[in-house]
Image (cartoon, rainbow, N blue to C red; front, side):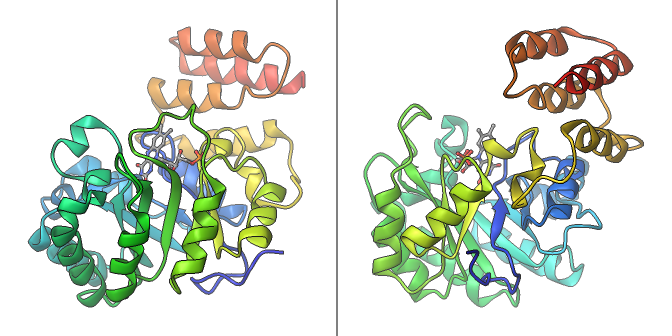
Length: 306
Ligand SMILES: Cc1cc2nc3c(=O)[nH]c(=O)nc-3n(C[C@H](O)[C@H](O)[C@H](O)COP(=O)(O)O)c2cc1C
């Protein structure tokens, strides 16, 4: 059973942000299948200074009924200014601070998961206070279990004190690789120690798996990232369309946008080559193709054979 969402929806399955993959046309489809959607992480400064790439990335598609913008910043003033801008221009329904990105380029700049380190909790507290108290929209955070040691219990305490609306917990450390399985016991622990709604994230593979996690651990929702690649119907109990129909719809949404380019076509098309015998070869073929129409035709043909 899906719990009533903290955002007032029937369904609390969230499309977890994937940089360069959960592009607006892809989010549009996931939203049609019932997902709450969130932009890829976007530098607050990029929004403040009207960087065209940042603005494109956070542009809300018409079907995104419950949509959040995810920010990357450690600067209190930038956070206030971005929140003001998002609110005044009604760009989203909630605002999320990224506290989970593990990339050295990000964490070396004291951004993303770096702020989970105990020595950075003064700054983190300031950011959470500003996020919650200067925003009329729900303010949320996406965290990992910690940077290189487990600190999420302390982070949850800070989030509770500062009225954060919900926390998405990707139950790995930032220093873990994806080979380390996500730790479901952290979701359980999180629910036990805080009254803030918790969204579980990490290695969720299907709609039924998400329902089972909600039941078993008492979390308020589940965020699905990689398993949604090439499979936006994961947000529905039962897939109603064929993969080819979904792919066609994605291509239609990409057409006439800046996202209709070789890079996105290769990535999105290769993502649809899942779970069949020659998937690895098909993916390789797509990634080596240089002609957009050829990629589309080849992908359609392969999907037709399934
Ligand atoms: C390629 C890639 C890009 C990602 N980009 C973001 C991002 O922009 N913001 C974010 O909060 N998490 C990002 N993540 C983390 C995912 O949202 C998610 O937390 C993680 O993949 C675990 O969930 P999953 O097992 O359902 O994929 C990214 C992960 C991957 C693999």
